[in-house]
Image (tube, rainbow, N blue to C red; front, top):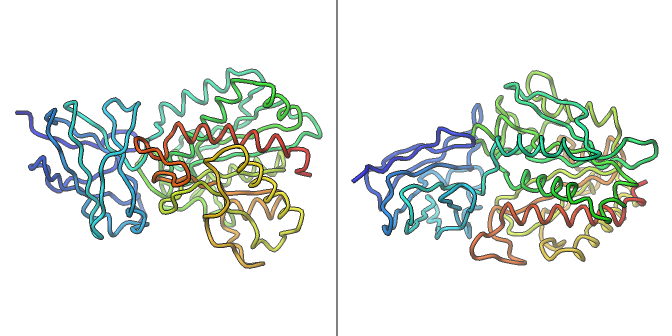
Amino acid sequence: MTALSIDCDFDSGNILVRDASHPAQVRLAIRNDTCSGHFQWFHFKASGLTPGQTHAFVLENAGESSYNKAWDGYQAVASYDQQNWFRVPSHFDGKALHFSLQVRETQAWFAYFEPYSRARHNQLIERARQLPGVSLLATGRSVEGRDIPLLRVGDGAPGKRKVWIIAQQHPGEHMAEWFMEGVIDRVEQNDATLQRLLAAADLYLIANMNPDGAFRGHLRTNARGHDLNRAWQNASADQTPEVLFAQQQMKLYGVDLFLDAHGDEEIPHVFTAACEGNPGYTPRIAALEERFRTTLCGLTRDFQDVHGYPRNAPGEANLTLACNAVGQAHDCLSLTLEMPFKDHDDAPDAVTGWSGKRSKALASSVLDAIGQMVHELR
């Protein structure tokens, strides 16, 4: 019999092995982000599995993770081919997360959410660059020197609205780049509805703001241990060059709508957070927020506006967050879009829960919503 082995020495891998000698109780732990106490994301490969046997795994430090209440109602994902991911029976006992699978193959991958690999990211950028009307405007660099491409869909003609969409500031939120793939897919389809949007607006896209963190298997931070979505008031070339690059490009081109794609660990819904606490918040911005939410609710059952974060009191926004910082700086509609790590309670899927495929479909609906209100942005 082949000995069971656990490996995470690959893109977005994260696990610590405590004891893999018992296939029915493989004891594991999640590794911290580099230079940070945050941890929650996990991704590992199990080899030497016995087809037909139930293998069980326990993440013994889950109860100490950054969002330890998020494990209630959560199910891990697994795959035999790194292409098709499905949920596996999981339960949280207050201290550890337990999950198991009666396996069909001798190896399988397990993760916190369906991973989006760096290789796929590179393929996505190259595919996008080949599309008519798409250009690479600039390339930033992460702390460790990885590319951060800024794509523009459109011709940059005077008077056009400037719609910015960025993703994966928090590297463990892989649904965010699946969302960006959905944006590129829709651009490639180039249907009549998208053409009408692009006649009025250019899309400015950063598919992955935190490539170092994603590659290292982080949940929350970049390679220097900084949460990029808390760095929009003090970004620096040394500590948070990823944010500094985005801010410089926004200042150069302007912003009429900003959407920051994320994943939320705890809330089993898709929702947006906005800028109601900004000192520069106006009735115009409030009306645009309501218009966006109402429009998107009408386009997809995967979006709702009942569940979400508590609203900020007037003047009490945290301006280190991208959504608030950009909304304040550019006096524009600015939203954080949150997707779940769990299933989606408004439209559950017992097999996949919320998934990369559903993140991509949501992106298409978001573009439709923007298209319906693009002329109202200014």
